[in-house]
Length: 223
Length: 223
Image 1 (spheres, rainbow over the protein chains, first blue to last red):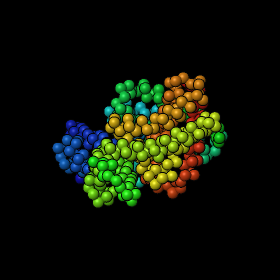
Image 2: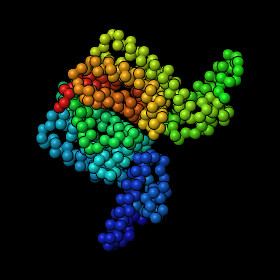
Image 3: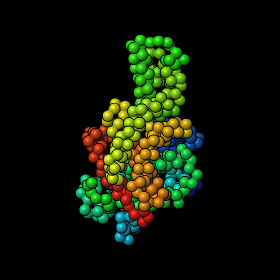
Image 4: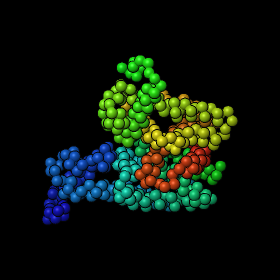
């Protein structure tokens, strides 16, 4: 039985329910990020979330698949749908290659600092994308696809002279930096505990990477 | 007591010793790559290597630190020292930016296919570089440093007009692709089991990445 079957609730009860659900969601995302989705048990999430009820995860999410999907939905609402809106706003200004690349890369970097769950979200996403579950990969891909498609198609319009093959390879280099490179750098920052890691240093990094990528996308198509 | 204390050995005995040691080394590298250095116990390595002697790892390598260092030494001999020799050979031909970048990136890609242990070596290296042991990170850095320094200094000579700060950032983009990006792609290739992954496809990927990086390094220094 899910929360909806409990009948009419006071506002306080709804808030309590929402809080518990949200706490479990954030706890699970952090644990999945740290230990891998497969390694974490529902029992350990219940314990870590301190819900005082060993059935809480089951109650709100039924099982691990439901929980993973709920986190993906959360990231859709809080990261990827806003990113599409922001990119559409930028596109109205008729951006050049540099500004389009920056607008495309920045949203996923910014979440690292904008939200307490930003780093966990990045690592969790990476675990899904490189994990062994085809089902999770597909669910996650569905969520990032609107942003990915919009950015790719917009870039393509600015680079009509590249062959499709060369364009798609360069697109892949960009995606690798934006996903694997990003994740790796975050991991390194945590490992070495770089003291000056902050939104400003990250923004400078992205701006200089966009210089580099602008040169890369504009390079002669075949050596 | 190490192998050296066992007194005079026949050639057969030496070969047997070397084989056992090598088997343990390769087994440990694969297990460290798969499960992480911290998670693997010496007991499980002994079992997996099938040495029939629970003390074999201790006998040859004393402890985990000795084993990790022996793998690092193995990679030094088989990957990084040859890579320096190859890069020095390339430097004698007075390469342009493109050819220098290719010569710098290719050796670590090629091992993926040249040796049965190539993929494990890449993953193990990545585990060390992003792992929590400062000691292992430093040991590994010592081994790759001669190649890294030679490539970085040679690139710098071809790009005298970039400020040191901008050059070092672009160098970092290259290193991230060559380490994290590479590792991530190998992981993805294994996850999705891409059927056409082969030395030729990898070489094409690197060549087109070098086009991109050549454009990136040559881009105007500040937007």
